[in-house]
Length: 453
Image (tube, rainbow, N blue to C red; front, side, top):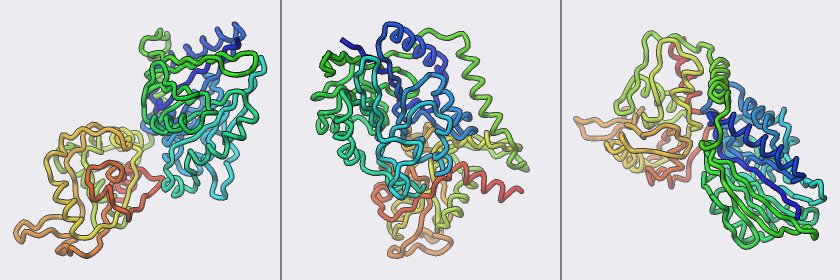
């Protein structure tokens, strides 16, 4: 029997605290199995880059690519954090120095050609002649990719185009899927030709894999907490005789001598690249997520002005700290690390009133929030700009005029409010415009420079 060992990571999100031991473990495993004349592959399933980390922000992700190069990855697919959190130009050059293949079948330039740095699939030949076909697909955020200048196709439709082509050339098919567990289970049902589905995006773990029909599904959680391994046994007829999966908990692996110093050095390197001063403030801007502050008002005004909206609402918990008098890019990353973009929605006056009144509820201040790009902990008090209550007349005003229930108004919001079901009216709104690639911290920088220079 030929043995093929496949190691995989996913959704590390620039959590590099354990990177030294991950690298050492993978290098040792690879050396050991190669010495035994076994075949070893190493794949990352996307969201390795996350711009909350100063190294990722300062190098526009290229610092992360050099880390993947150190480990000798075979191939990666891109996640949404690589795909929609960079400008077109930055993503188009993210992998310039990659020493591995980038496999993403469903990402195209606008003329429906794959960019030069992407292949839909790749055939790898083992030293015993087994042909391993590897395909990559990523999550279908069609509107956001389009706004950035890319075209992305529905992943399962794309797989129908490529699986047959790969099957003709390969003995084994491996899918790198940044789609989430539910999509992976559907793929296993609809594509019996696929032997291994390595998953990500939904941050799930499958400690011993999940067998569905002919496919084994595997996934390694998030933040580098686990490393996954799939082992295949191939018989003389070049068919898969057996499949097994296991997870290694990274915290239980041996700590390397340089682990802490490496993690600190990576952070300091990024911090140094972001240390340039933006503005000098007349006084520090203190922040508290549970009260309206000068800083949260400033960001809310920036949001309204940037989107050219009638009014804006913003949860104060999106800011994670205060600003001292000397403000740098690193400071803005620290207090606003989220990959959250501005968004403008169109609502009737009655809908705006409904959302506004709901936003006054005190429940938001301590509400815990996870996902949707949010890197904080609580939603916080909602801040408003251009909309208020006239308590004397008991009416709601937009730009000092009584709200008209049937008139259409534009409302600027953080895009996370359209993805989560915090406000049903916002979640179901069809008239919305996302502003990419700017994050909220970019708007805050723009407003600070405009106000204090």
